[in-house]
Length: 76
Image 1 (cartoon, helix red, strand yellow):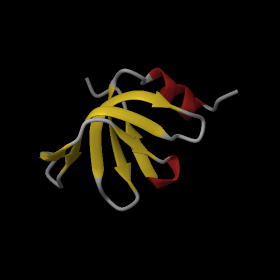
Image 2: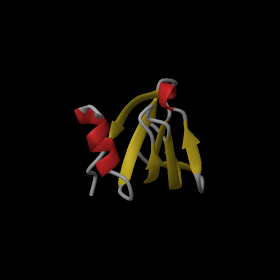
Image 3: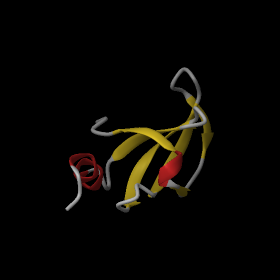
């Protein structure tokens, strides 16, 4: 049975999320898939700069769960 944070993550599929990585970079995009180890697949992804503005635009990205510092959900 998934823990409460994983339940929230699974409910966030097809919604916009912001993912902050351990190296300090942040990505915003639509979460299209996740697994119990928090590996994420996102689409329409943008890398954000320190001010929250767009630094680089990507299409589909894969983020390995062990690189994630935190995930912001329920943005809109």
